[in-house]
Image 1 (tube, rainbow, N blue to C red):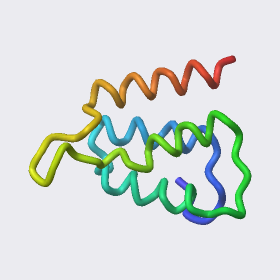
Image 2 (image 1 turned 90 degrees about the horizontal axis):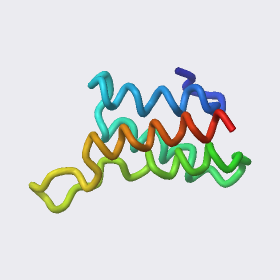
Image 3 (image 1 turned 45 degrees about the horizontal axis):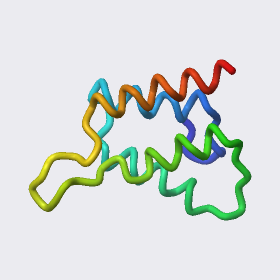
Image 4 (image 1 turned 180 degrees about the vertical axis):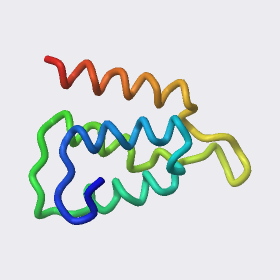
Length: 88
């Protein structure tokens, strides 16, 4: 995964997968996405922007000790939707 270059759809998709298989935390994914979402100098395609915006905030919870706002099943559906949108 690149650290300096603007990520493509492959790398963005990989972030969803690595959250689900436990290789990165939701906090790590959120911070990674925030870096790209907050950089106003970049231009994104619709699918990439949609997916990045989902990743940015993926660590939100229902409260200080609550469960995640979006559970793993929702993240799986987002990953499936991303793959579907990419195949169009």
